[in-house]
Image (cartoon, rainbow, N blue to C red; front, side, top):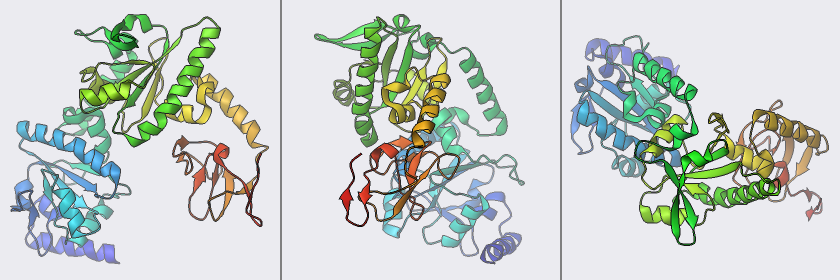
Length: 418
């Protein structure tokens, strides 16, 4: 009833005083303005005729802070070229102080924190189930046929190039992406007219390695940064796997695998410190090709591991998950290899107990898989991704890799060693 009453109230208000599309959406019976970063009030009616993004987010959720930081640069670029673009922040912050602190970093407009009803109504109307969420609205679209609901993905993938975020522009970008995928080679991924090399460590410093020398190998593109906490956890594991794969190949007289760092470090000193611990290759710091690679592979967070095959085509963008699941056994990361490993995992799972009591958790854990309640997850013990088989708490959602389980005798609280 509350949702229906809210919609009816909004409709009555619009009939009486708010005639434009955005006045209908963003104004209320008591308010016809939005907040600006300077503290001034901006009339909602000033948005009519503009392309408007509704940013749903909150200060307490780290992905919102990361996305907001990325969006600020794109917003400022677009506003300098297209004044008819605007963003409105729809807050899920826990209190006014949190809202004020988070909104203080934003250059766009916002619905006042106190207007809870309008924020709830917008959340229901656009069926926002997760944050950050960016809904992009066209000015002359009364039926919402041109509404774009995956704005976060579009910003990460295309940035300002997606403007004006209409269906025609997005279809054009998808066609361009398809052509690029079909014509993808290692050379056009990693080199350009100004650079035909990547970097490698030597005793005397960094040296240039021709990209052409990597053609015909399986290449892992490792998107990472020194400031990234999950990267700091994953990199040692990646180094161990890399060295084991290289050793196994060397014993066969082969050199068919390499890793290339694609850094998101914020300055050269951070890049050099970050790369110094790694035994593989790297794109030079600040290289223009990095942004193209992020867009091409739709990298939405780091660490991210893309596997490119000997033919220069993408094998998978989920290399991190494969490393977490299978370590060095994942090489060469092909579908055939993954299917082989999955079958082996299925056989091993037959010997796993259906129910365990795990050290450090108060509920029983049930063995689940993709087909019976499982799916992609983050292990609560090692903080790494997982899929397929897992031990899951049906009461609170706690999930761990089978290999991370430390089974305890529930009555005596004695650790059972396997």
